[in-house]
Length: 293
Image 1 (tube, one colour):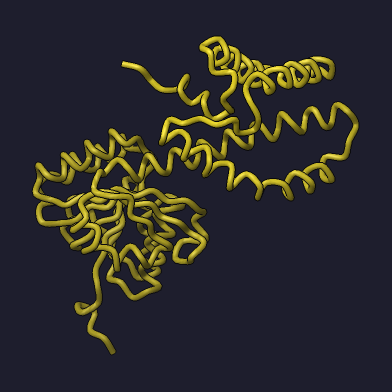
Image 2 (image 1 turned 180 degrees about the vertical axis):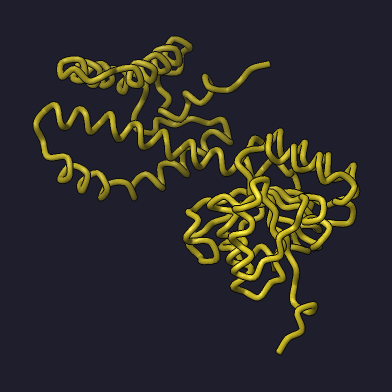
């Protein structure tokens, strides 16, 4: 039997649904797992599974070379870090908490000031899937620190490292999630139109799902055009697309479906055409979305 002290050690702070799943994944894989939660009874629930429950966040961090923070938001991370203080020295902190790129960089600065290494991470998946390939985790930050803790993090799912800028994991996560919301709200608006015309929603969705694979090549082409600044007539020229938008807006108005998003697209097209770029395609409207200093 392996001596308890020979097993790898990890600390998990935050016993919400995700943090508890992370802690259980480590326990199931034989890690000496220390846990801490602001509300003590949530941490105590892990004691029956074999976790050691620390009385303070500082003691929890001191108990292991690696601490995983899975908290509600970055404000909670900041509160924990403040309470940990110098106990973080010589340790590696890995945050799986949602937040902005700027917050990740601020956390890294705090860790550096207190003699700790910091890796920022974001989880794409659901707590029941932690520890399987169905969970995707994005990481960024100091490469040496990441590579040192990679074997520990691999226990949780499929990893992607996005580079030494600690904010990049948050950029990846926020962009992926935002794209999902943009797509899904557009889908709901479209279903409103289909329903208003009396067509079957499920049959329409089956047809729509069958066409989605065709967008992969278009997205790659658009990204290439934006990177190079050379815009061809993808989806057709804006001059032609603008006329189509009038039809789409009119159709929605006739069925009582809101037109805010379609009017926004039409407004961008009109602005780009007015700039003399009516021969370019949809991707060229990216130029109107850039934040200018």
